[in-house]
Amino acid sequence: MNRRRFLSLTAAISALSAGCLRRSATGHVADSWHRVRATDPQWPSPAAWQQLRRSVGGRLTRVESPFACRSTADCVAAGQSLQNPFFLGDHAALTQSSGYADAWTTAPSVYAVAAQRTADVVAAVNFARRHRLRLVVRGGGHSYHGNSNAADSLLLWTRGMRDIQVHAEFASSGCGRAAQPAVSIEAGALWLHAYGAVTTRAGRYVQGGGCTTVGVAGLVQSGGFGSFSKRYGLAAAGLLEAEVVTADGVVRTVSPCANPDLFWAVRGGGGGTFGVVTRVTLGTRELPATFGALSAAVKARSDGAFRRLISGFLRFSRERLVSPDWGEQVRFGSNNSLDVSMMFAGLDRTQAEAVWQPFFSFVATDSELAVEAPLAVLTAPAQHFWDSTYLQQYHRDAIVVDDRLGAEAGNFFWAATRHEAGQFLHAYSSVWLPATLLEDNRRDSLTEALFSASRSFALSLHFNKGLAGAPPSEIAAASETAINPAALDAFALAIIGAESAPSFPGLAGHEPNVVLARRDAAAVRQAMTALRHVVDAPASYYAESDFFESDWQSKHWGANYPRLLAIKRRYDPDGLFFAHHGVGSENWSPDGFTRIARV
Image (cartoon, rainbow, N blue to C red):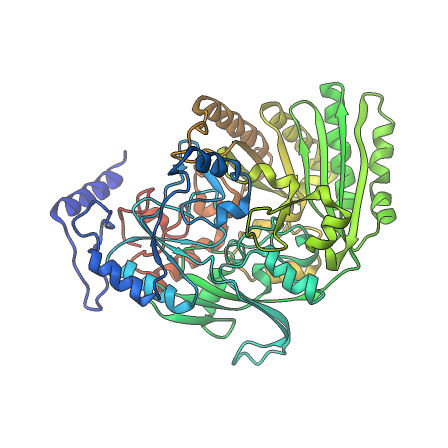
């Protein structure tokens, strides 16, 4: 440990032992080194909690795990619901991922404010600040870093804030910009519900997430890639205006002309960091005639053939897939397989098949390559792509309906994502791959890196999570957000992840296999090292990155980080909002309870 680090820790320990708490002339806590835990004498009294309950209209509840079952039948029923993301999202004690090996395990908050209005959010923020509580902000609950939960915390749960209003014309007040079609969405809404309002019922498109149960506000704050980002860019770039409750309890409207610095920060600077976003207004777009999905699988019979397959696919990608039409992913397996699971916009079946004809012609010329799953194409009218009634009639196997008693009509999630609900992560890592790697003079290096990485662990290339090939206007719009500029010229985001079945504390028979998790984590690290070797300045997507990422400030935000940190200091000087590897988190202990340096 270096001397500076030692002195910082020594000062923190001394302050804790002395119970140091000084206040500045402005009333801000100057040296609040430790947030209050439930076992501390400074924890709010029952009377204080009761006062908060009254101020939020009775919507303060104690958080109890659904696995603290009163009967065997209840426990069995709870266990059977673990792979239903709507079940997980409807419980204040649960998160969409159940943990991350050697990093975090889902832990219920002590209390939750089930907010239904902005005033509830203000009350919770003020209460947490005054009582020095660890505040957790949760909408959809899709955080791989565990930011949707924390023990000994107050949960600000926005699930009940779900109002959606579609506007034929919207213009931010005072900006002097032309009105445009838009949609205003409260913080607790899921993308399924946003698509239902905008696409199914209004015949428009709003750029959002691929998974139906991802929260709207969280995705926008992370940057906002979706299946069709090669065509429509980032969700963050489509933000016209937002309502944000900052750490001082003030409700602020942010836009290009009102609090523009905070507006920039919440467009890709990370959720739960600068304030609580209670409502977003996003521009909507014209729909293409169709959306579609395409799948196939090819297997190589030798390592040499697999190298040829990778190289041939990369050449095909440069020519046909780095375009506004295509998104989603291709997976390279350790068994020398290539699995295609892609989506497209604006093409019919014949056109989609024609795009892939050159690749399969190439495969047919190599006797050591075999098509294990022939090309399969699914198309649907774009307006019905998230229409549960249409999908159940024509594409029933593609979705899983929320069949719980009393479930909201129309709720479904994609069958292909079933394994993600409640998953326990062994490891997860990402790196953006610049489009220059597809050029003739660098393609061999990328081929070898992908092959070498796949010897350690399977990996996938997500074409929709890199903006190379997108319309210039979308790239320009994304450049005005806080996301790492590396995303702008990346043809794909490479992701390597390992996971197992849900592992929620208190649920017998669902304990994680720690030995396997650590073995997988080592293999993922080795694979990612091989892949990052060919990237000049490796960068990762904050929302889908390694919990243990080193130099995360640079990898997540690049040259944007100093500006983001300055905005954090302005709007949250005492660090009320904490997220693992979020802006300013380097000044706190990993659990967010102890400050080791000033923001």
